[in-house]
Image 1: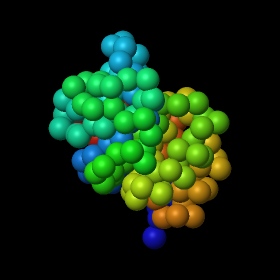
Image 2: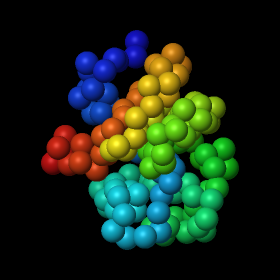
Image 3: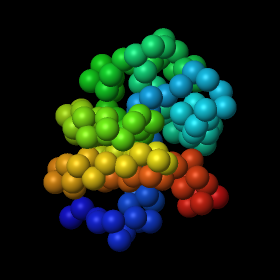
Image 4: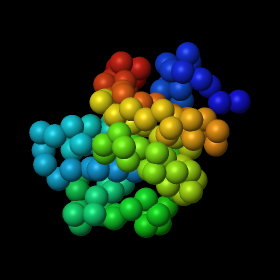
Length: 138
């Protein structure tokens, strides 16, 4: 049974147990959250798969143009794109078999949340994966 919003802490803890994270909107530019958050996650042991149509390598990893191009199984899709794109990204995450979608701080989309819940995916929005990892894992 999918956990609901009231269980946000346990949802985040469960997501943080996964290991392979596709980062949609991953940036080449140090100093931007879309670069520094995945860099932190990589440093603490997660496998980061950058998704960005305008780069070849980020953080030493091959970059893919879209989620469906990634040749390995993805656990979590971490999103650094505008809120309006979140539903489409969540649908793509489901299509590739991801278990969870995490929308970073400032990204809200109730339709994406509803889709994730209807398809038994774990879902977080408007939270920083780096900050939550640090709070939970220390």
